[in-house]
Image (cartoon, rainbow, N blue to C red; front, side, top):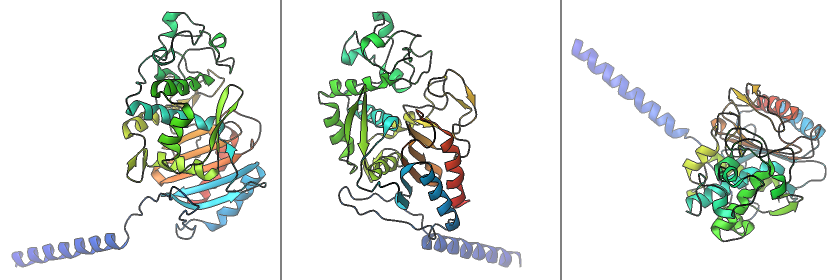
Length: 354
């Protein structure tokens, strides 16, 4: 009798496992989609397919339009769920990334390192020569490429200018976090190290490999990237997939992980020119204050973000396989990175799927 019961239990277990396996096969996890490098083809996914709340869409779009947005895209697993344009903007119109483009510089620095052109732990002067600041040689030689990636150069951040006369000692490298335009020196480092122009190296190693359009434009002391919204979404998708475009490694995963992880112990909400959500505290541009809590408390904790002046945004959320793009004019007052807009926007995005 006992043997018979035991055999029945084994049989039932086998049937149960077989059914689960069959169910798994009938509802496979959706693969990541990558749009073709050329043309306008891009797969979509509907709100109803995702079982999201259709009633939450219009309030989100109304808010975006009210807050001077020009474009908005949500990708899930690479597929377009929402794509909207406002105020005479279109899918073919280029717009500036502002400081959201810092993440492009971070990515290119990583690509140059993986190709053996540079090492981020080496001092900046190894690549662009000495005298690029007004510091003493000893002070200047403390500044590594990594310090520029993490905003810890120690240079005075009271001016945006990056000529040697404006790059003045404020603290030892690595001892102070301050949001500063001096990161653009990394573009000079990459150009010198690769023996190519910055734009040519960028185009061949990143832009063209993921099908972006766009170009670098000099605005004052800044080299600012401009592109279509879909091009910004392509870059976000690359980062969602940890530096790979389909099966092609554009940026190696070890550098990607470093770039999207807390990079120093002063501003926990900052990686390599990426903002990081869900940390215990953070700093903001033009401030030495430490703010407790998450950068955007209404958004997922694992999100990492490219933030640009006047609310240019790339939000990447690995836990939801999601990328969100917003381009436009300032939602409220002009700001360098974070604004109240982020908090309310994420409340409205959350309403889509909660």
